[in-house]
Image 1 (cartoon, rainbow over the protein chains, first blue to last red):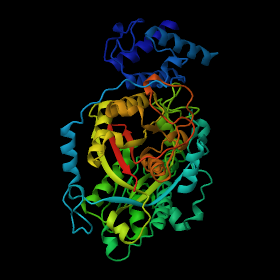
Image 2 (cartoon, chains in turn purple, green):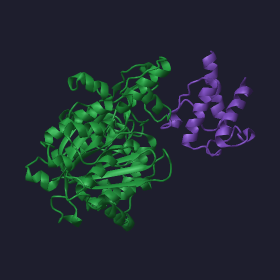
Image 3 (spheres, each protein chain N blue to C red):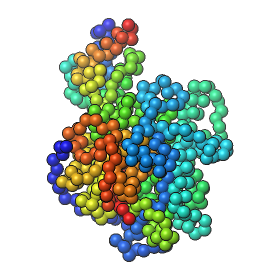
Image 4 (cartoon, each protein chain N blue to C red):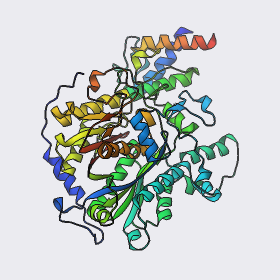
Length: 88
Length: 442
């Protein structure tokens, strides 16, 4: 399940960043991938739609959000938690 | 309190010339009044004001709330609010349109038009003007709104999409159109000169009032009603804003380090802008003088603001007014309470004012009435009038933690008595559109 979620998120981010999914590594930050603030909000929307979850993210205080957007790895981990909570 | 380190930049001459050229548009018809003043331009004064917003249904109640630092932001109440993740707003309370309008009018007026007409009636009543005869031909109205009849869109989309109805009320189009409020104001008072609506998102009202000012100053009109209105607090209106993830779930705390976003409001503000000699000749009470206006475009990003674009509008308004930086005692900030706006606006003010930035006061009344989007500059102009006329500076409430990126005197939490001679009102819109108005005490 984890790999599956990871692949789906990488596909979403790759489409947003106009990159190949292979280029979306766990270490990459949104900035590394050329995703600006509006692109980030759009990506989170796409993730919510893909997984039918609600992501707690406020663009005014990203560092305080429960949804850690530091890099792709933290984003994937946060989505996995939300998907698990939903199934829970 | 620490201050932003500043230096005094020269006012760019290119801004100066461009703005003064724009302000000297040729009069469309024979103007009355004195053309011998500064640069051959006529003076423009405010002789009436009206409002309805979350703080009250008139100017006096609103100003009393400003003096008390009272918050009008509450739990939202409308259909399907429970499906929203943002459930607070500066909603107009105890709104009973049947108190002011008959059944037929209510069928024809969206809420943004209702708010506008109420504010306009207050403003015209205070001014004492009547527009029968020649004055009506030399009077007009220019208003700002971003969403126009958004409640009407929302209700009728619900009817056809959700409820599956195949028929809507015949007045849907004349209710929802963005110029409906301006047209009804023109009909209510017989204003037969220029009448139109400006839509520049959060700067709509300031753009509208700036144009009204220019028209009276140039002689294109003798009297203009101006301001703006917004009624976006419905399910679709708030849901759309949720998408951007810039809204606060708990409070609007402009300039505070722990601010976490904007809060929507609703309502209207309308003013009577009148040529100075015309007002003096009839012995009208003058609330304040409008002395300058400037607009600029960032030409950069659809949502992220630019300090340079904001600064050009701030500086341009002072140049247009013939004011020096040291003349400005108070700025009504755009101050949305978002991370991006507040630090960008403070940087623009700090750079535009140099050392004087440490001495002027700047506050955001959005902390009390919320962000009225296209109507916000109009309601906020009341804080400017209060500062000039009454010597009371409206506070920024909800202020809890200093932010080094907003290190100006933001008049935290409590109103302050201070004599100020000239003020600015800032509005910086999505789309990078900036509009700043300068007022002076008379």
